[in-house]
Image 1 (spheres, rainbow, N blue to C red):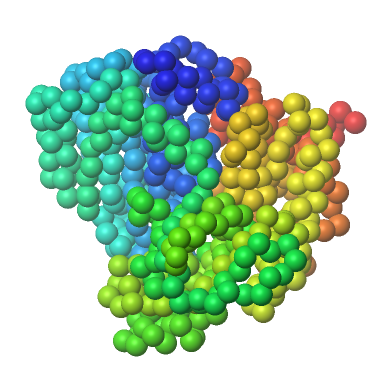
Image 2 (tube, one colour):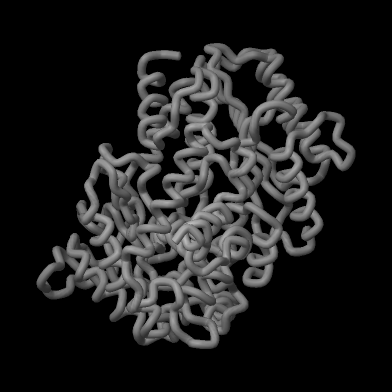
Length: 508
């Protein structure tokens, strides 16, 4: 391993507070994180995609991604099928070795292991992780009538050397692709052989701030306002807007954190109306029938009509954006002109006001808006009252701590993990946050319950209970990262958090 790659691996271990085991295992975890991050734009638990050691059939990591969502269990698939008529799955396989050459034997073993993974009667012994992923994949295949297309299969073999397109190794890649294509299970199969420079690039990409460059020709400049650097209003062709919405790999970007709602799916009446408009033979109607999209960015640079925005999010238009993404390949969608409001500000208070103003006209509960603005802001500030060296950091906005290299990623608590930790510890619902997270958000955060009020992020709650649950989650996670608790118990982590609370009550 060269010095640069070695430094990046050390940086990865430090950021995630992972104890070094040996060069092979360290590089393996570094690779899995970098590869999966290139395919999945949101945060994820590394342990959830690792396949363990021993009887792993030559596979170090697996990720199942459907419509931009990481799938962990069957209920995740069921939840998506309830909201989206046709789903688009991608299955990612990773094998990493710290050796500085592409070993044809290991590449063959990896390829055979992936093919055996899809066999109804596998020839290779499987550990628990491989078996669970295989069972989940089989369940997905059973839902083939609901797939937009057969799953996409991606294989990544990574070492620390340089790919030279050696004839024998190239033949292994070609043969593996051919064997998998013959199963007729996939719409596309790709086998990537990555060396030191390629995996280093993928890791560096995980640290990049969200940036997009697009042409915004049909616009007017809005008057200067306090706290706002620049603002514009106009329309952009979908071909330009998709540069904001979709990354270079064709995946929808993780840019909806500041939006108070998640995607409701095409079954939702509002989204169904958008869908019907997109299917209309007069796509120009979309411009006048849709309220448009509001983007807030921290900074902007301009060359003529070409704009580059940095650290941005869509604060209004989550539903429209997701429906556009679902129909991105349809005839006529490319001709759509999207109403767009672009606001540049670094003032969080202004961002909150924009979020409330742009969403309050929609069918969004006032309590929900409050929970996602003032309460979230106060919770973030409460986290900051603890010593930076020993405390945690609440990630209220996407990648807001990404530029601060002094903060370990393991100490950053996302909104999703905050919900899970609080739900497990103080609401005694570890089984729900583990397998039915989508319904937890609707019932406990959005207030779709008997009280019609948020149970999590309730404005009357004290922030200390949220910090306490997050701290318990972090401390437990640290024990797993340091291998002080067997990784096989990782899937029970939120049950353990719940148990900690029960033990504390008994102790008092």
